[in-house]
Image (cartoon, rainbow, N blue to C red; front, side):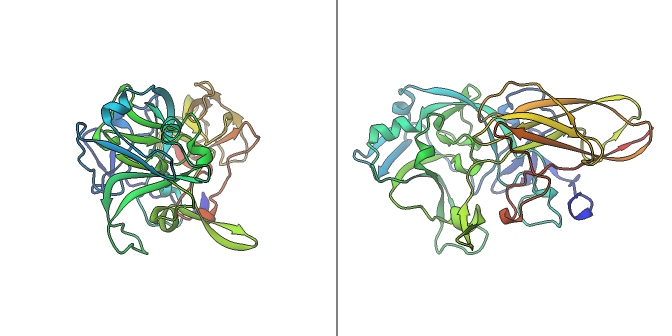
Length: 368
């Protein structure tokens, strides 16, 4: 295990009435139970919740979505007008960029997400591209800023001088892809307040902070947007001409997680146990999955339960004949994508407290 220290699992974590683990009460940050991934789609009531500020109260009747900035025909749409436009439905996995933070050793600040700040759902809405075409996107627009109705003062330094709205920018090349949705339904029902009612963005393949909830404004800009979240919070260190520079997080990295068994679970010896989990990536397809039951010394191929679908997870299973010899065993899962990229075996420290996509060690005990 990284750092050769015991993983700290918060067994005293509180549970909400819906079965989600409370990581923070206000603003609301709730973790999904990752172990019962028996269904391809995560039920809405079990989908993880990530909020930066308190949930705003929006009224469907008075709701308006403004599209402006570097466009030729600025416009404002009501909820009814948005719902009247041609829609698309897509299955998309969302993952918080800090998912699995509890696996970092030594412990780091931030919400101590374990495995469940990731979920998979079906989203229905209007392609962002259609709205930008209607507004007449300027040729020199380079990014699309998505702004939500949630507002407040961040907790981490450096603090902005006044309260801000949550806002994130998406590169133009991504924003005009057909899969990016301005969504109003989740799993066939209107969005709930916790998941962005009445309207939110869904940016497949990018970490969850790009899928802005409670969306009220879409602004095209001609220079890179340097808001708080893209510079002071969700950013990482990269190199430019040998010098360290900060870049905002974007595309989700290749990752797999073991759902069952749990960390520190006790298993009976010399019996077949089905190890299960899920794997996902950003803009590529997950094509292979392997499992190690001896801490990474040897690997065996696991079996996918779901077909390849870009931007959605693939569940998998592996039948393990547990050893006759009792004692601790470390399980790992390792995914591979269509380009040949293999999931890393350690955390890239340039990402700080984010992008924890290395093979996560699940220690179990085999005992009578």
